Length: 274
Length: 315
Image (cartoon, rainbow over all chains, first blue to last red; front, side, top):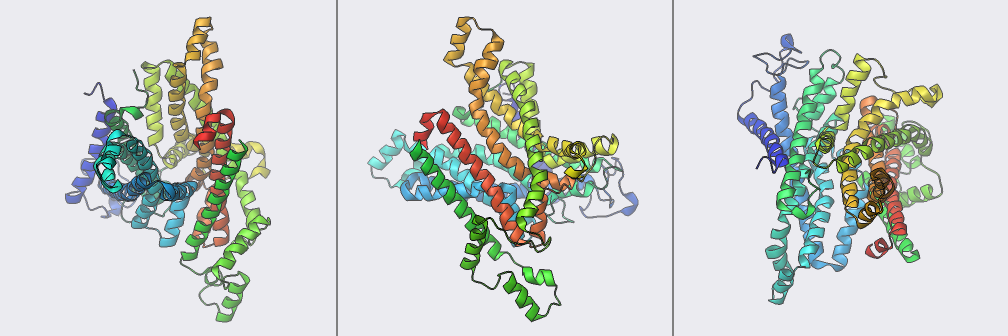
């Protein structure tokens, strides 16, 4: 298993670690994430503070754990919005065809024309900065991604004999979509969701870095990097640890997505190594 | 071909129109009164009303939309209220930072990624392949602003080779200006190079299996001739698409990187304009960024159709 699917195993391991850190942080963290202790500020790793403390003497391990929870929340909700709305639109477009299909495709084109970070800045400008609005912004530009993927995959399914047979025995287009199209394109959507999860974590970190996402004192990996920038000459770990957390989370999710694709949908397989 | 060109042009115009409408509507619901923001909370009601009418804020929305688009088409822009200069002038000055930055990043990522991708494809399943694919995975996972921060820490703070932030301006000499763009360009280029290396590897692998490559081998051509003459030239087609799209994303991606390095580029401009409610600037810059994406897409489609007649029918 490990030899055949190294991506999947490594990806699942890293993603599992991320989820574990987030779950544990719900019931237990070494310290409170906002507990300041100025006397103990910018300490190195020790038995009492595993990863040291930040400029306010807050425990970095704690803040990274709560930050993981923050990233996962953003990822789950943003991808959920995209998957539900986009998936439904894509399946609808494929099932109806004609002008509905055309409208969905053209709307997706228009949303795609906006670089993701630009629309996120616009949306947070309208609704104000904050974690919830960052989630809405990221979820919004996930919708056309899933709509396109779902539509493309669903159109293929409509070309299959069992879909036509379903129509022939009197099922409605909705019925065929539910019974034949959806189960068959689920794998593609799951793979895309994993990749978009990674994209969402990166986007949230960027927004938080720009001051448009999660607001202090709530910990967010992106915001921790922003705070570290003025202090990193004195204490480099402040700039290294949160970035490492982002990179490992994204790496894990991307590897997991690649691994899942290899197993679930061999047609889309990236030319494998070896 | 003409029919295809006409149809694509129509879609281009329609997309731009829809995007401009979307921008206008989003800014309509944006909370905050620009006139009040300029004059301050103590402003007298009649001065406020005078400024509102001077800025055209008292006219109905459709009229303001038409005035905006009409102005753009006639080649004139509004006046930024924070900088008190025409928006086009402002954008022009900022493009002098962002376009070179994105262009250098594009060149860097290509120079880095194409040889790596070819190496991986020709050494498939061996150490080189594993190395390149590993680099690609790591490169895609590292946020460009974190890479930017780390490069400041190493090359600016510790080694003092490059400036940590800011831009001296082109009037300080091309050398100094380019020097300030090196670290930002690398930060922008890394994730793009990671993606491009994967695309290069995949498309070279696909071409390596083509019949004409077998024919070339059968003719007795050297591996090097085959690789550079036959494989790379054919593999370039999908790669150009990615490159075209990447330029658009590099321009947008520079928003965050410009924030890290405090570069006075387009990204900084839109970011600051949004927080200062300088909506005249916001709408023009956003529309410009959208236009870049749409026009590049259009150009790629046209280039495709010129190379490959099948693409004309598919579209």
